[in-house]
View 1: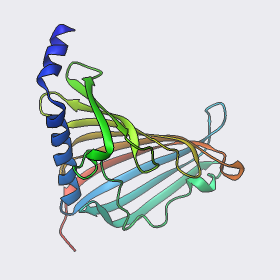
View 2: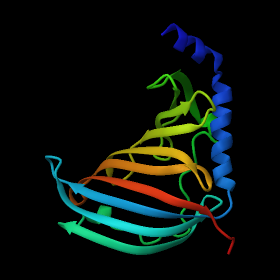
View 3: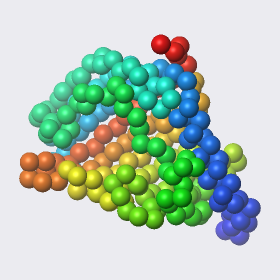
Length: 215
């Protein structure tokens, strides 16, 4: 315990935030990257069993943080049809993922703290927006002590968005052919309002990352 506290004391929160921000900004500015996306969406019954699911496969390209190409390869449905809230997105091309709270432009909107992580190799950075907003999440990041690389990010909205009663997201990061990137995204949530009352979870695996030519 004392050794862990000593190592943690040697790390400075501004340095950790700067490393995470620089890495996030590199991803935003990166050149074209092709990848394969495999997503499973499940609608859940009250007892947690699966009512219906869809397995969706895509080939996609992202450049400068924007999806510039997304080709649907297949969609396989099992069980009951999914609720409208869980329908396959129709306009994914041109979509930009939400910006990381660690980029320099957004850091002033959050309060951060540095803590021990879930294992000796990791530290944890907690984040809380100064003002709750559906676009500003709260959560925690797990960061490698050795090189300050992001390993895992867990987020929930600081203010629940419209149409949802709850939402939780988990991102797992790894080194890929296009640099450090999310390779696993998991979501779990529940819809709001009588017509959207549903529980769901999804799991997206991103693989086969490779640098692509600019169009």
